[in-house]
Image (cartoon, helix red, strand yellow):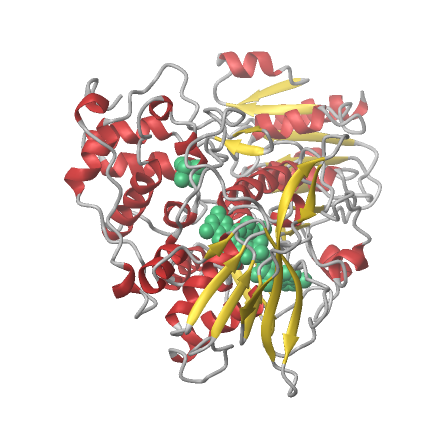
Length: 130
Length: 495
Ligand SMILES: Cc1cc2nc3c(=O)[nH]c(=O)nc-3n(C[C@H](O)[C@H](O)[C@H](O)COP(=O)(O)OP(=O)(O)OC[C@H]3O[C@@H](n4cnc5c(N)ncnc54)[C@H](O)[C@@H]3O)c2cc1C
Ligand code: SF4
């Protein structure tokens, strides 16, 4: 089992899936107090976290498609197939917005690379509140 | 396809075995290498028939027809004909983790369903498979299959026979961290301690295990799960468990005199022999010797044959093999047509050696053992038998009728019971986990190879009952796919 578990308690969380460590800190600052960020290295780690009994009620997933192990499409297939998790909003981070697979992906929101942190924070807040 | 007219031009040629009298004086492999030219001609015989059966692995009449792991046989036959050995080795490893084992010990159901076998001799598929694997090892093309990334999931495999090794190999390939537990002192299951060295050199099993260890798989020997550590502790410490413990419960013969000394289960004889051979070239004497003895092997299957071959290498005075079934016909019976597994008379290596040394095939057919008689010291001296006939009952079942007046007495100082196996051992792990068993006593699994306990999978003889190496590989691969899907939330890229 993955060791990392939700430690920040019952606050809204961003589950940050994939390696965007550079912007993680900036996003924390942009979102301000009241939000916590939970990183996941890859799709399998993210699924482990979502299936964890301590999962907080409010989560927005920020997903990078290209990851090792269980990549983004595989993660989404697994998440959407799970009735407990299928409602969770996902923001897709992509450099290929015009790619057919990405278009068909059907995420709740897209953010283009390079990430503008202010935009991402706004999207996350909107989805988190919705 | 091979050569369009290949099957018209070339005949089937099998690798030459060393002569029986030469090979019974050592424990080395009975086969010799096949020259490349011969192989090319044999590959050329493959017609790439429109719908090849050789790779289907379908069960017809309870027996495999075609390769159970769906080896891409016509592909590599063609590649060998064209001299593309490396590509052939790659193609072979896509479906088979251990072609150097199957290429030696598989009874080759593929050949029984080869289309050429309809009115000619089938392609020498097994020998081509073996040569591709050997060639790939010689050229250094077989390297550790280390995964690029790790999933962080931990899987315990219990049992290191072909099923456990195939499962471990596939799971490691998928990036899971795998530990294999084995109760014996060496890894390999029946590949190591069942099948004797002359049929499958143990150096080849060790070579494969070394590659797997170098790819990141951990092997823990001398640990019996269910005794040295509890099966339940595996459940709490690992993300998934795969049980590949074989079908080690031997069928015994509960007749008068069974308690006499000198009567052993075949596996006691074979295991101790290989262990002593590997530990000390038999110098430690820690094996059951057949030297100078009259040996009676009861049971006419593979295990019995291995007992015959082993006893002859000990320099037994003579060896007799008793088979309860009738002698099979020389060619297919009308109710056993192509592409079914051909139930025909075969002279396997052990019998061939006995025939060379003793003048005749050592097997007596349609014969039942009635009792063992010993001397005053409690040592077995005689095996008493009676000939039988197989008759069909009104309900269609076959039953045995003893033929009065056909009683025989075989002198015996060593009796080896090779009567098959009745499923996995029930005490220990199976009992502790409360695994559901079928009416034959084998472990029940679902389509993903998961047992009645969530997160615990099973494969190989433990599920099928006593079977074949190739089926164990098939099972291990299938269980790995099931485990991968289980751990990866329904996703698996494993074939
Ligand atoms: C003498 C003999 C000759 C044979 N010859 C051929 C042949 O020529 N060709 C062919 O295709 N097939 C042959 N077979 C059949 C073939 O060997 C088996 O079908 C195959 O090995 C089954 O593989 P497996 O992995 O399921 O189990 P096994 O090979 O039986 O391996 C099971 C392993 O699990 C270990 N184990 C069991 N319980 C535990 C536990 N609780 N904890 C830890 N370890 C445990 C055992 O020690 C063993 O090493 C032969 C069988 C025998 C007995
Ligand atoms: S594994 Fe057995 S059945 Fe499959 S190709 Fe090899 S010899 Fe034939």
